[in-house]
Structure formats: C-alpha cells, structure tokens
Image (cartoon, rainbow, N blue to C red):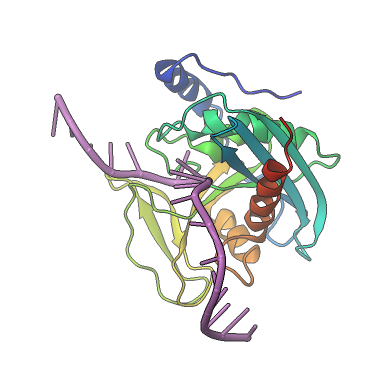
Length: 226
DNA sequence: GCGACAG
DNA sequence: ATCTTGTCGC
C-alpha cells in the first residue's frame, strides 16, 4: 500500500521534495509509444464540502480504449501552493491508482514533472513514490519560456527555465492549436514522453488519458456523499 | 522586497 | 481548480 508522506508545513514539504528528488530515474523503463497500458490521473475539488476526488483511467495504448477505471474521494489535506501541488493531489490519486486491478506501464499526470521550480513536480513525485514510469503533460507554461513551435501537429520546441536549462518541451498535438507542455516524470526519456503525449492525442489537444480522468473525477465528486 | 506561479 | 447557458460545428 503506497502512501504519500504528508508534511506539516511548507518547509517540511520542500524537505521531502529534496529527499525524493534524488530517486528520480532518467533511464527508459516504460513501454514504447503505442504499446502497453497507460493510466491517466486527475483530481477535482469541492471547496464547499472540503472534498477531493481523484480518478485513474487505464487505456490500451494501441487502441486508446478504456481498460479499467477507479476513483477515490477524500478530504483536502493540503492547500494549493505553487510548487507544492503534489502534496495536495497525491494522497487521493495514489488511492485511486491502488484501486486498479491492473498495473499500468506508464502514468500520465495533469501537470509537470521536471519542469518545476525545484525540478520535482507532480509527475516526478508520483513516479518516485509508486515506482511507475510517469510523465507530466500540462496545459500552461507556468513560469517557463519557449519559442513558438511550428503550427503543425508534432511540432515542438524546448521549454526552458529562467537559467536556460531545458526542462521539457512545448508540443503541438493538433494543427494550429495551442501546444501542451511535456516534461519527464520518472523512468521515461523526454523523446518518449513527447511521443506518448502525441500518440495519446489523436483528436484533441489534451491526451485521451487526461480527458477520461478529468471527466471521471468530476463525476465522482458530483456523486460523492459526505 | 514583492508578486507571480502546474491544479 | 472553480464560477457557468446556450451555441457553434462536425
């Protein structure tokens, strides 16, 4: 049973990030793009009721058909603090992942991995804690900068931190549509992270994994009794 | 020093 | 993240 260490405060959270960051693995262990089982995870909040719902949806990478779904509902246990998002989302997400009966070869997170102020975003944190290969696909560039990629699906450009370090890529998943921001989480190369993100987005800007998880966690929150 | 900042 | 109907388009 995997659980997330919960810090008492922001300083404690940063200490945990510093400790876990050294366990990020950069060598490729995940399935090749287009193969295996890929899980998408996402979370929805209800501040009124102090509830958080997470969903984990597993797709067959070859067909993008849903293989299994799981949800988990809990109490919000950490505030939203930029840079510390994982502490707010992970407890419930891990519970949803553990409710699955299959083990995915890759987990796609709605947010960042190494593209993070402290180089340890949600996807890195989830990957290290579960041991599963993970990538981050975010909808916003956060504080990072990039040259606008070409306007065709598959076009990309480096995503850089303020010091110039490449921390991910802006990836166009649909012709003429705003790119998504891909970064490595754990046990996946940046090339394959982008290839997976592209393969998972044949029709929309956002990967099918994230789209399924997003709608499922919203539904779980609506139907939650508490 | 202050504000901005993934979801 | 969330506040939110109808409407445009395939």
